[in-house]
Image (cartoon, rainbow, N blue to C red):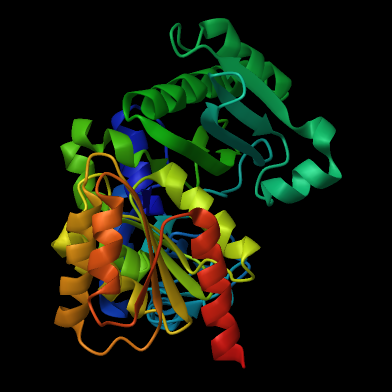
Length: 400
């Protein structure tokens, strides 16, 4: 689960990570009040107005701007709130901005120059260890740095059973070229950042940039945080951080019905019981000449209600030209699934796209008989090969 920058910074602050302070606002008027409050708390007189969406590259898209007075805060916030912000990570359609963060200016003059770094913490599945990725080239797209200057990307692997050792944090600070007070600050920063990542069972913490201020403080100017959905049961308070405005409406609807759904760009909708079977089903769709329109796992206990919910979600995608239901009857009986398909079809009404139902396992023959005798525009199959051929056939009929 992705969360907003301001939410990620609140988590970091709990663990002692120094951050660029800020206050959120939903309107231009609230933005001005937030700036006044921020001035009273931090003394800042310049403000950074930052769009809050679940995507990087906001600055290049016009979603991060500097305001040098309250009037500019109002004008910039008014421009950004409600805009459709397009970045490399949003796609061409962009994301609508509902909220901005009014942040303090931390690039103030001083005795030494400011310096930006990049740092992230995530799991390296190849080694089974957590890894801290860092570079002196902060404030830039990490993908561009990795492509142009791979030698500048550093990695520090951390055994999760042992945790981050003090010498590792010191090594990171040294490799970033820091000395004196800034070096000590960076050691504290790295240690606190790793603890925040580890304690919250997160999938990723990305700070870009990590800033060394002119008075040698180390702080997080940005925070991109992905929480592990599978660990949310251990962090009930994190559930309130979810922003459904940032998610695909169909995926939100699916989650409310306890369905695992991911929208894709194809023309054949698929509904299965099991993630592995879903991957095989998408392969079958591609081999038959189609493209999967979604990943939809109804789980091991598929029934009429879950099948109907799955149908309704798939049919809301206008690109879907056919639906392939692929069920292995292990825990669930195929005849019950077949009855669920027939019942769902009748409840929804006129379904204009052809439906192929492949049932295998417990009571598969009975399930196929129920489908065949239903009188509905539903085709049954037993073998994956048969299902693939039927998908190919119905797509060819529609393209004729």
